[in-house]
Image 1 (tube, rainbow, N blue to C red):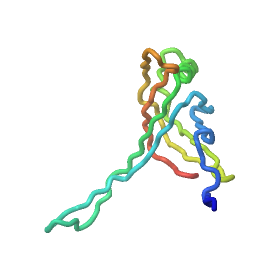
Image 2: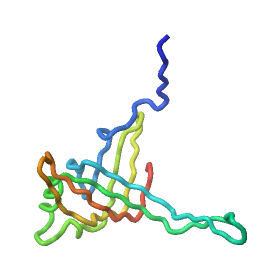
Image 3: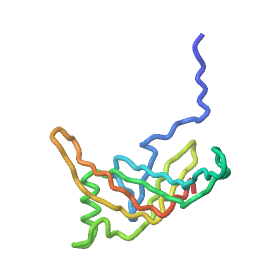
Amino acid sequence: MPATIINSFGKIIGWNNVTYNAYNRDIEGIAEIEYSDEVKSENEYGAGGFPMGQSSGNYEAKGSVTLYSEEIVGLQSSLPPGVRIQDIPPAPINVVYELNGSVVRDVLNNCRIKNVGKAVKQGDGKITHKCDLLISHIDWNV
């Protein structure tokens, strides 16, 4: 008897379902985007060896985007002479994808690209660079 596969999630989202919009345009020359947030938490100790409670610290959002060299050149070309990509004012980045017929949007707020560079070696078929992002906070599924 053949096994029955139950797919409770429906179609699983993948890279081809993601749109990355920043600086008033869809960014096409993107190879990867990564983002996360956390609230620093710790166990607090008093007498004895076990925690007596837990504390919460600051919120932190972080992320990065890996862009093809052509996209970096395109961004740089759209800026006035002498202005670097790192000088672009903070702006939201929208990451949008479809999940079972519903649109899901994560907003990375007040983003700035922190670094730009290039590295290429023999045999590479493409040139990409991982740009770290400065993010104030993330709004999930808005």
